[in-house]
Length: 148
Figure (tube, rainbow, N blue to C red):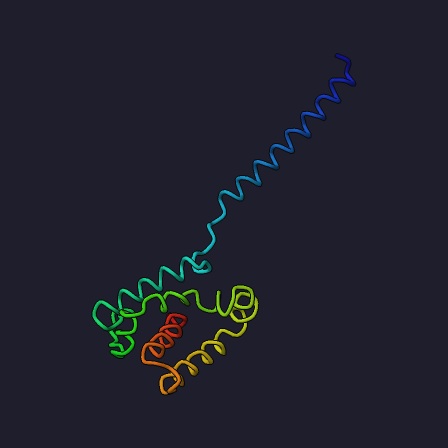
């Protein structure tokens, strides 16, 4: 092999070695990066919603930081009677009124406004004759879960 061929081969090996090294460093960086925070995933909303539901229905109160708070009996009864309405909105402003609007508008910039609006409407419905007793309970739950 001539000196020029040896030099060309050495340069090619050097480039390959550098490419492999760069790829290995990138892979190592990706593998060592911390996992995404679960607080930003719908699964975390579902998990915390389940925990809050269980805490509320077992004895009619919730415990937060070792303090126990009694719940309105109407709310506890509604939770027991209509759990699917509670679960429907546990993802809160991430998914309601729909995924795109919730993620792009409500969650990042208008969560407080949205929750206030829903809460006001839910409580107004409690005295509205257009709604049955069951519907009133369902409306309460659809708002409570978003606040969970």
